[in-house]
Structures are given as structure tokens and as C-alpha cells.
Image (cartoon, rainbow, N blue to C red):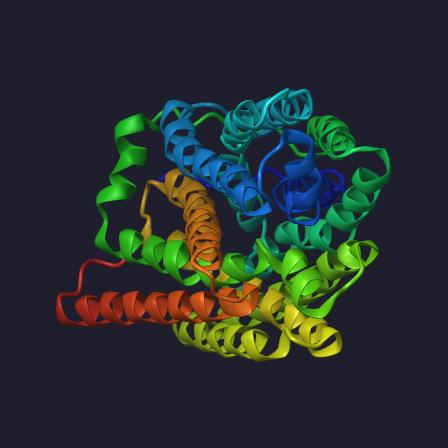
Length: 400
């Protein structure tokens, strides 16, 4: 296996901040639309639930982009790849703001999602390679804090600005953040050596590994429950509890606070005992999502359970670390596909939530949809673990 250690950064905290800032921009772009669904729907002349197609389109862009970029850019030095991905992301968001029709907006959200998975995957590898093996999940968690902070600060601020200045302003602002992240990565992340032995074929090998596929299955299904709730959380509280529109940004902030707590706790649990942490987090998510179904009829309890549902982000560092352990030489592909799987979960959760609501179920029924997905994710994890113990394969050495 190649030497995956990252050269020492002259300013390691600024290097981590640079990587997290890119995640902050990505998270703001991904989640701000949840707070602006009604504004986008009114401006583009569609129903509110139809805006879920734009959410799913972005997520599908991540699913398509992660393996495609990981394979084609296998030999590109990691810092150069991160900068390029941020540039493409900035362009996609500015173009989204300029969309003149709903379906052009949906298509541009797909394009904006293409760099997402590869960026987070490569950023996680860069961060994890700088710390001891037993601290990888925490290093990944620090980079992922950019995503969680986007939910607490970025998405609420962009939602507030979008309500006052038009939803397009939010996507223009994301483009500016992406350009700032490009500059910081260039300045503070040390250059990465080119891996001359890398190839698309080697990276694609991750997609035929049973343990990699089961881990991605847990992410793409088990994480879907959180997105089923979150995709429609603002209209749910507005229509079931009469919450004023002005509180929409605060809903996103509460979810984000839950995400930060879950990210930090989940990373520590994963470093302690990875294979116990994953099912424990899925069970916790299931309970929180069932609780949301019953709590969403009252504003105070609904907001409480929004935060509890947000703690399900704890699954992210755990699954990213698991993929590093089982991916062998195909580290970039596996790391990128983790985020593709999460966004597959986003697409699945948003779609199932929308189907359920359109069928006449109450808006809070997304909590029951989420619980079912968390349970299905637990079943996938259990089956994969059973097959691994029954037919063990040679374990891959942990990355780094």
C-alpha cells in the first residue's frame, strides 16, 4: 500500500479550518433549501413538496460524482483535487441561483452535487493521515464539524437572508464561501504527493468488496431516516404546530446543534469500539425519529426532537472509519462513496417522505418513515457482520 501520511502542515489548525470551511459551504448549500422550500416553490410555480425533487437531484449528483471523480482523478494530488472540486462547487451554486425555471433549477442542483462526495472523502483522508490510527475518527469528526456548523450557522443565516433578499442570494453566498475555501486550502494545506501507482481500476476495486458494499448499504439506508425528517421539518412544524415562518432558521440551528453533539460523541464512540458504535447509533436514531412523530404536534417538544434527530449525524465518522479499515488500496473511492451513500440516503429519505405526505399522511409521519429506514440499516449491518464472521476474508490494514 502507498504511504498515505500527509506532509506536516506549517499551520495545522488553519489546514483543518480550511478543510472544514469547504464542508461548511457544502453543508450550507445542501441544507439551506429545507428552510427556503416555500420561497423556491412560490417563485418557480410548483408545490412545496415538489421542491423535494431538487433535494433528491443534489443528492443524486453526489452519488454519481463520487465514484466518477474518484476513478478519473485517481492520480491527481489531493490538494489540487480539493481546490478543483471547490471551484466546480462554487460554479454550480452560482448557476443554481441563476435558474429561470424549476426543472433547470433541479438539473443545476444535480451538477452542484457532483463534487460533494469526492471533496469530503479526500478531505477525510488528508485529515486522518495526520494522526495516529486510534484517533482517525476524531480527526474526521473535526473536518465534519464544518458540515455540522453549516447546519447551526450557515443554513439558518442563509435561510434568513434568503427570506429577506430572495432565495437566490443564499446560493450566491455559498459560491463566495467555496471560493474562500479554495484560497485557504491553497495557502494552508500542504501539497500532496502524486500516487503514481493509482489507477481507475484500483479505485473501482472498492465497489466489488463485500465489506465495503455492506458498509455503504448501512449509510445509504440507515442514514435515510434522518433526511426523511429533516427534508420536511420546517413545513412540518409550520403546518402541524402553526410555527411562524420566522422561526425556520432556528429549527435548522437546533438540528445543527444536535449534529455537532452527535458528531463529537459518535467520533469518540467509534474510536473506542467501532463495531459496537454503529448499531448503537442506529438504534438511537430509530428512537429519536419515532419520538418526533409523536412530538411534532407541539412546538416545544417538536423542536426538542428536531435536535435529537440531528444527533444521528454521529453515524458519519463511524462509517467513514469503517471504510478506511476495509477498503484496502482503494481509499479515495471508499471515502468518497461514503458521502455518496449518505446522499443516496438523502435522496431516498426525501423521496419516501414526500411520497408519504402526498399520500395523505400527516407531515410528522416522516418520523415513522425514518424509523423504518434506521431499522433497515441495522438489518443490513447485522447481515454484513454475520457474513463476515461466517466467511472471513483477509482484513485490510487501517489506512495511515
